[in-house]
Amino acid sequence: MLSVGDWVEVLPAKEILATLDEDGAVEHLPFMPEMLSHCGRRYRVSIRAERTCVRGAPPGAHPIRRLDDAVVLDGLRCDGRSHGGCQLGCSFYWKERWLRRVEGPADEEPRDAASAPELPIHPRSDPTAFVCQGTELARATRPAEPLWSPGQYVRMLRVRTLTLPQLVSMYAGIAAARLERELASRRPPRPTPPHGPDEVLGLKPGEWVQVKSKAEILETLDARGTHRGLSFMNHYEVYCGKTLRVQARVERIIVEETGKLRAVRDTVILEGSVCPRYHGCARGMPPLWREAWLRRATAPGT
Image 1: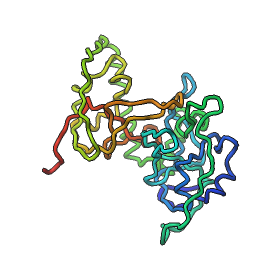
Image 2 (image 1 turned 180 degrees about the horizontal axis):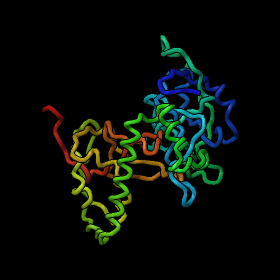
Image 3 (image 1 turned 180 degrees about the vertical axis):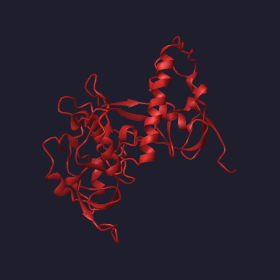
Image 4 (image 1 turned 30 degrees about the horizontal axis):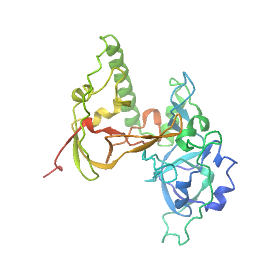
């Protein structure tokens, strides 16, 4: 079993293809074309991917589910080039059978690029939709242990998904968020603010912005806590008031519940912003930020 900090080498494409079923997957987790360029290269394990958030989980099911025999490798994210240019920037999940343990980084990069076999990117039933790891997580995972089961927390600590201070901090935050939701449910519903023209900044990668205060952002949200369908999540609050740099504009994303490519407006990803390991989730998704939640700023220290 691979552990955090282990060095691994991604198997050659030919060996990985031999593990895949007719859908290009292992246990319903696809090996994606965007992963081929990493074949033969060495990386370090950043986290065991035993838990992941899932969009489109069965009705009533908890969105955090178990994923077996998979890890996340340092710094590797999907660039969406084979999936309509999707810009969500998801981390790849790597089944352990696609990797071999090695002693450390390679002395030099492999000379031969991985071949590019045909891997499925569309479901058979709908050639206008896409298949990726995100769209298949509901099938590739199983229900996690009940939240009250203590064994899962011992395991999180043992495999270093979370440290003890992180575990305590996370559940303190969850308890505080639940209390806030309970208090909010007793208040009159917040009226939907009248939406005039969106605040469009036209941000570009490399520009600096300040995340507005929570109070300012709440003024942009409707009764569902969304701005034109994009939620402002509780864990975004830690970035309120901070100055961050724009990493990328987001114009296209795959909706995981449907596999459909959707256009997005006035939205960016900020460097250094990432969702926390909620209940040990390994996805580490970069939050999507509406420009209406940001204001231009100067670089720190200038």
